[in-house]
Image (cartoon, rainbow, N blue to C red; front, top):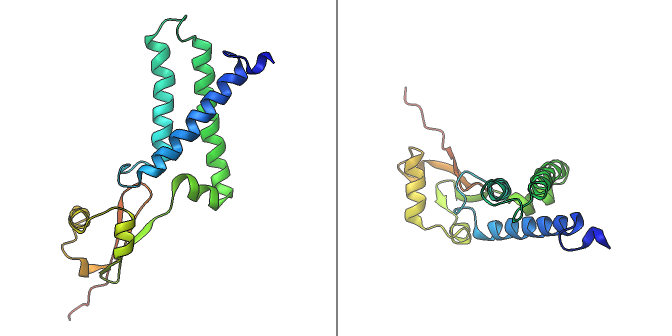
Length: 162
């Protein structure tokens, strides 16, 4: 079938899809802390588009045909739009692609198993808290490591002295 021959549109579609999925899985396995403010999904889009756009700008037409790059760009953007729409309607898919936040501190106590699960040391947690203006874990009602690698902090309500 010419559609799936080397160099055909079907062949390129399979190549783009397989590399896209493989890269997304690898970025998810890398963990939240490696991402910092971008989800694995966001990084994948940046990498895929950067490669598709960059290659055609640098290499000759005989090496990287412009139409093949345009098709790759179209497919990456289309997959991103499709996955975003699917994730809006399917929470499980959203979890698989972007992950969920992890409870790190609960009522002033570190949730050690979650800290270990996220491969975060106590010292690194203190650094993240200081970046949020929090000097002590005891001030924190809840803290979550978001799928982007960002730490979200909910402080305890302070007693008001009158």
